[in-house]
Image (cartoon, rainbow, N blue to C red; front, top):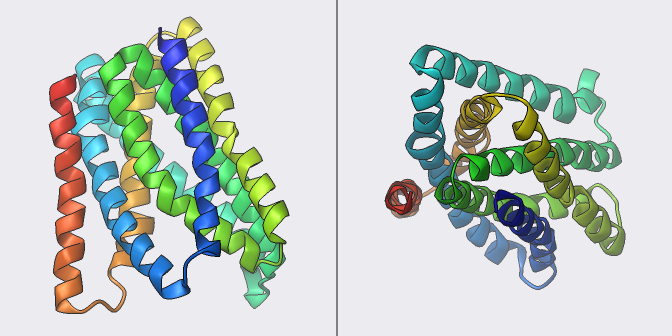
Length: 244
C-alpha cells in the first residue's frame, strides 16, 4: 500500500513542473502577486508540517535529543548545499546567467530527490502522515516551479527546452520515492531519521528562502494579509493532524 500511495503522490508532484507555464499567460505584476500569496502559504505549511507532523513522529521513535540534533544537522546541510549549488557560479563578481539556469536545475534535482525520499518514508510510517507530507510538499512546489521556470528562461533557455528540462528534473521526486521505499525496507529506523532530517529542511527553506522574500517592501495592509496567509498555512497543517 505505501508503494501505491508513494508512486501516485510523486507522479502528481512531478506534474507540477508544468505549472511554470503560468508565466506565459499572465503579466509580470499578476504573477508577482500570485507568487507572493503562494510563498506565504507555503512558508506556513512547511513550518506547520515540520513542527506538527514530522518532528513529533521522529521524537516518538528516536527521542528528543537525537531528533533535534538531526534537525540541526539537516539545517546546516541545506545551508551548505544551497551555498555550494547556487552561489558557486557567482564567485569573484563573475556571474553567468546561463550557468545559473544549469545550477538551478542541478539544485532542483537534488531537492526533488529528497522530497521523494521523505514522502516514501512518511507513507511507510503511516498513510495519513504521508498525505499531510505530500500536501506540504505540493504547496511548496507550486511557487518554486513558477520561479524555477522563470529563472531558467531568464538564463537564456528557450521556453520548450526549459519546460522539458524542468519536467525531467521533476521526475527525480519519483526516483527518490522508489529509493526511499527500498531503503526503508532494509535500514531500521531510517524513517524516523528522515522525518527529523526533513523537518530541518522544511524549517530551513521556510525561514531562509521564503520568509525573507515576504519581507521585501510591503505596505502595512499587504503585510497583514501576508501574515494571515502564513498563519493560515500553519493552521491548515495543524488541522491535518486530526486525519492521522
